Image 1 (tube, rainbow, N blue to C red):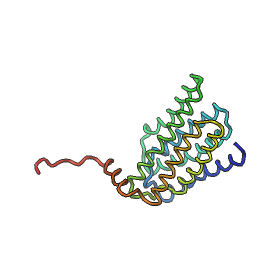
Image 2 (image 1 turned 180 degrees about the vertical axis):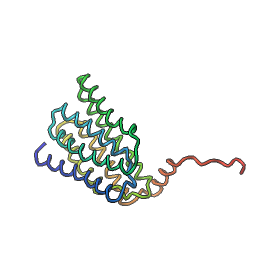
Image 3 (image 1 turned 120 degrees about the vertical axis):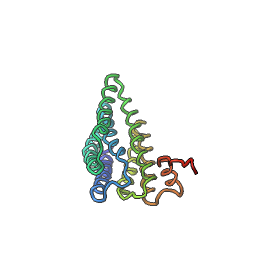
Length: 210
């Protein structure tokens, strides 16, 4: 990957996270799915291990910086929405176990598989939450649009280098990121947000005497 493209990726990736961090600090966390941002830390740890295993400096450097900014964002969310420590432990222990398993098996591609799963797994809760929420003020449109743009570059890099573990997760992240941004800008499609809220709502008691 050329130095210019690496610099662009670095600026947009970190810049997108800084936009979301600023929104959380100024407005709050309305509309955010905390698990998406805790999952960012886990996903970044996995991709950091993948970059080390595959000896890709760009992946290593960008994920180190994402880990710092993403960690600050996750901490800001924890301060705003109290979360039990026990709930946070798997987001750190999980990637470490994946590292150990991949290196013990001599199969760094396992890190790519885990990275793919964590990318999709962490973004889906935010998409669902955006559909359900009536107040989405805590979601930064710029951050999600920026993340989508970043993933276009990552996908191009993955396809040109023949690395499917970078290419396909980036395609999925691109689609999900712009879906979240579109929902915030235009609202959920008619009936879709209502259906999501109905599915998430607890069952109502039935009055058998009626």
